[in-house]
Length: 358
Picture 1 (cartoon, rainbow, N blue to C red):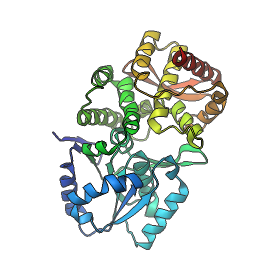
Picture 2 (cartoon, rainbow, N blue to C red; picture 1 turned 120 degrees about the vertical axis):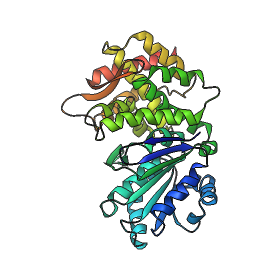
Picture 3 (spheres, one colour; picture 1 turned 90 degrees about the vertical axis):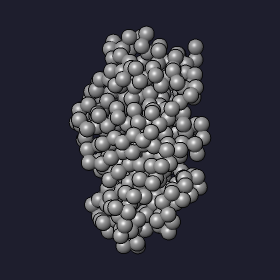
Picture 4 (tube, helix red, strand yellow; picture 1 turned 45 degrees about the vertical axis):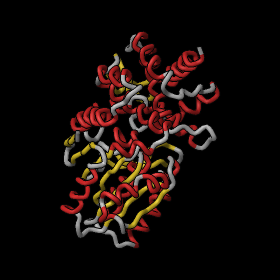
């Protein structure tokens, strides 16, 4: 069953690989005479591009720009290389960039498109669970800079998003589990019943329904606050701390992928919610009961707390004194603009450490 979700000025289609037939028709109707490039990483080049070309033969001779998988590719030098290629191809504002990949490709490709000639059209074809439920939807694009996560970016909507659930079969288990962090986040900030329903079906996940439901939750929030002046900040639950953790370990042998860091970030920010007296400890215990057997929760050494907390000061939501976090007051109810002292965050790290080592 296909799910069609209407965003502000673009549509999101979720289905099996039949969605690629609709993508082919979309290209024929809107970009038949336009130049096209595909941005893909090494993994999607091997596992997903052959499927795409088989279902959309018109793309068989399209230029493919390959990047390395992983967060390290979200770099200004990679963007510059892609812009050079687009310039050499005499790419114009009437042409189309097709982003085929996970969150790194959709973030990077969207940013490249938003900057080149002040904006060229792009389509998102997300291939990872993380990208399907979160990164490819909502118009946020970005790259990392000076070691800080998504320090450069722009709000730029794609012209369409086509989600082929069958691409999830190409993922390693670690990537699927990572993507589930954003799924659980949507439940924790907006829909307790969804959080509990997802947990109840972990042994037999219906990914098409999950992806469509998560997108609807995110889309409703984004539609009401496109530029993150208010309640769109709800989507940042777990991300102030989680991005800092991800950045901290990025250049180490202990690198965490996005969802792994965000899962830890959600627990630490839930601990912070309890410290501030806005979340009952029983609700926190329920989150731990779901997360501990499912996510690979890293035991962060005490010596790492301070450098991670320093990284949170670079979070985009901050202004004035204090660290601006999105927290939760109940399962399914988030609250924005909770300014936090470093001492409170230290206590939250300590409480997290105690709970996962019991």
